[in-house]
Image (cartoon, rainbow, N blue to C red):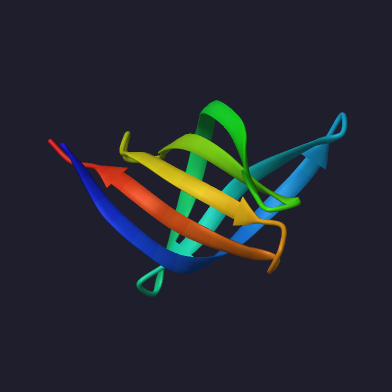
Length: 82
């Protein structure tokens, strides 16, 4: 079951071969290490893009992050809970 979060987060990302790759993020005072990006896609917000990332953290939890080009902010959109 997924849980909507929709909260701003701090993210460390690297750029590899022209691709943005999130590697860890801070949410609720915790630093969460990303071990794998399982999907990526883009949507539009007017003329700006929103870059979405499906990721798995070190505890095997699935999360969805987004980077909003218009504001330069990252968000934790959803987490999946068992």
